[in-house]
Amino acid sequence: MRFHLRNILRWFGATPIRIKLIFTIGLLFFVLMSVLSYVVIRQGQNVLNQRLEETCTMVMRHVSKGIKDDLLLYYRTDIDANSRSLQLGHIRESILSVYNENISGLAYVGVMDRSGTIIAHTNTERLYRKLAPADSAWLMTLETTMVRERGANLEYIHPMFTKRENAEDRRIFLGMAVLGFTQKTIMQPIHEITRTILTATAFIIVLSIIIIFYIARRMTAQIELLGQGLRQVSSGDLSAQIQVLSQDELGRLAMEFNAMIVQLREKLQMQKFVSKLTLQMIRSDSSGERLAGSGQKHEVTVLFSDIRSFSAMTERLGAEEIVKLINIYLDLQARIIEENNGIVDKFMGDQVMALFLGSHQADTAIHAAVEIQRSIREMNKRRRAKGEVTLQVGCGLHIGDAILGHMGSQSRLDYTVIGEVVNLAARLCSMAKPGQIIVPGEMIGSLSGEYPTIHLSAVQVKGRTQAVEIFEVDYDRSMIL
Image (cartoon, rainbow, N blue to C red; front, side, top):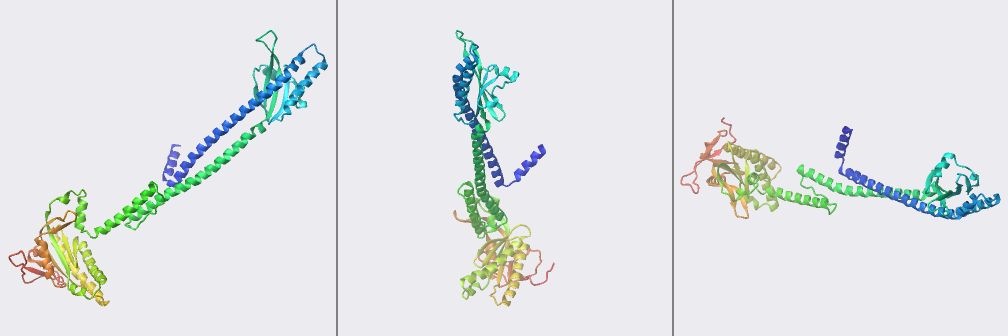
């Protein structure tokens, strides 16, 4: 039994909310209507029985009052048979007059004498029948009206007494008046009321289930739409938009969900304009306590990549073509940088600034620069074959200590890097020719020697008293390792 109950509870727990609501509320409503119907029917039966008793009491009094004197004369021993027959006639006329009143459900009226013999009856076939001795002895002990079922009838038996003269406490038993009512006729109003109530109850229950089904469907439809939206969002689709079906709590929840999706889309779009370095900082310090803090010194490798001869090309192309073209090359470079564990710090027009942190940062930065140049060369071959415009870039790199921190105003901050290493890398990038990668001599010692280098003429850089030795990374020659 306990196992079956557990299975039922498990099944009910896995049932859709719509079915739970319909079943629970429908069952509750059915129980309430059943109890209400039972109470109404029982109350109707009590009222009908009370009215029937009042009717019987009134009829009994009328019968008793009309026949008591005749019964007294009937029992006298000093009258002859004709007089006794006359009294019986009066008694029979009295009960016939009551019977002819057409009282609803009244089947017969009769009178029994003190010996249990029927001396008057509306059905003449029962005249002079005598009760069994046991029934007669039992009925003679009655003090008040008794009701009993007899076949298809309800029989009311009322004992009749008269007081003995000069004896206040002694009564003389005269006989019994009997009224028989047809149960079918008496119970017909109850049956009609019962049918009416049951029909109304069934109608109300069916109507209620339909209404509950509609309400549950509206409620669960909103929940199902929310579930679909959540599944879309969890799969990375932020185009979800939930239809609001109501203005209640579920409807407001759907509106809040839609507002959340809009904010997520906005946040996703905003993230494209924020460097990953800034995002990492925000995620690692969600409390925002470091936003007002000072910067920190880190060893970092900086890579600058700049498109060559782009300014002259802008004069020949329209604005849309320029943006589309430059985005193709910037997207290629950003993907290569990220694949080599680098971080695109910012785009400055047609220039890319990237940072590399951690161990082997110099090598990974060089690998990224080499892959950028090789990938652009391959892409340009395909574009030339199609007659499309091509671009070339120059790269400059440097490694050294720099300050990482929040730069900007109180209302607009950027988490970036500053220092001499950034300035020198930018300067070398501006010097690089199309397809060229230039690094300072200070960085050569940090490289693994995977790519050979070509010594170039030293250059004078603003902020340095001595010329800077620079080298070109020859990524087309064979590896020396």
